[in-house]
Image 1 (spheres, chains in turn green, red, brown, blue):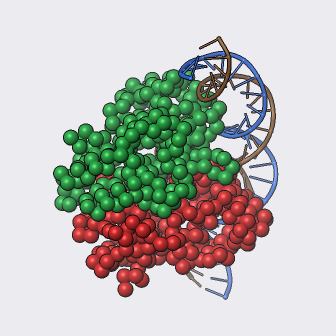
Image 2 (spheres, rainbow over the protein chains, first blue to last red):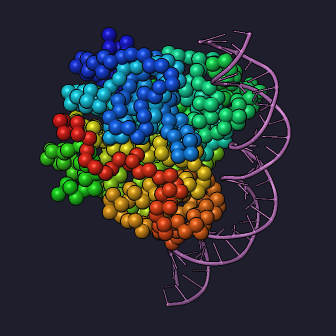
Image 3 (cartoon, chains in turn purple, yellow, green, orange):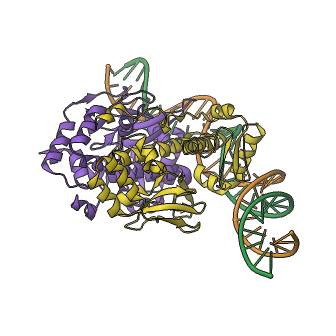
Length: 247
Length: 247
DNA sequence: CGTAGCTTTGATGTAGGTCAAGAAATGTGG
DNA sequence: CCACATTTCTTGACCTACATCAAAGCTACG
């Protein structure tokens, strides 16, 4: 049963979970409900924020600057654990906003640390999940710092595609994508109008179409080459690290 | 004794460590030696890489793209735990290079997981340290994505200053800084020549001088305002999260 | 079926890149 | 402690990727 929980399935692919641990994970899902768009789940600068395990829908985490500019740090899709940093730290350093209406389980600071106390190996699992997030953010930083606009945008959408495929949403032909070109712009550090031009360019090159809430890969392989996309940093295929079996 | 180890001091500020845990931390330091510049400690794409606890000197972690461009993701200073992701994942997604000759303790995959097995609370400590790293990378991403060149550069140096102060290197007047303008350029996503111009601009505005291996703050407060630097994301001051005392 | 949020496009401006070359530091061997 | 080499730093002239401003055409849904 707990293996039906996407979050459990995800971390189980890394750390072998016993019955006790699976129960603890199931326990984390008890406060599950729906959240509408327009209300942030986590607020930058506030204390005692909760984390959330996303069951359905899309969200994004972002930071706002002085001058009102915003940087979207990452998109969250079903199975993702979001706001972990806002639980581990006194005050949250970021916001999380639902992009679509979402279903999520709230995990309070107390919940999480209780879980760690009872089943310490889950801390390792969360450490691993957090490291995977970090790897994505690093790749995002590399894109924003070094890749030209079109490559950067393509790269982001390829990453999303890879992540969605892992949870059974989307395939090689494309995926349902509720984000707007404004979201995309805030994520890749461009203006919406430039994002639009860049998407047109990619579409006219016959590689990918971003339209009507759907991303379609017209020529997946060319796109991968174009964006210099190497999915190893997502590190999701293959067996878990052998040494963990010893735990 | 273990409290003289900067790394132990750092994590002890978050998770209260017992004797057993302090011993485990000390144990992690057993393979300590010197590493020269020019040889990477961790290599992108290779398996079974070690992590390192940096005792002295500076290093940086970075990624290289197809076209040879490089993005420096973070600088590491004494007390930092580096390469954690390359231990948790099968293959490393980044490189780590010493900027100065360094002293560091190698921590192999086996070492780390053994430690986690024996003293699971250290996994929480490492999770916290990793989250703090993530917070820095996020802030870095925000800078590269949204801040103009000068603000971005100033911000990076202010962050370094804050981190160095915590380990007793540098103060409000400035700090010894072995990084070149080329490093800075690769970190902030600009060309070295533009970094140079931007540093001149900041110097001529009477805010900060970057020269001869030293950063001097000529007007710290103006610089903080200019760079919109808010250090709460470093989350290092004040007592540990209360709930942890229960562990 | 109107109105608010998206998308698309054109004309023009600017931050930061590129190319080139000289001046300081810094390091090395004698 | 000095010559010489190498790595950094600095500046100038010019160029391009992306931003800004402005406005029109979609799409959706209340």
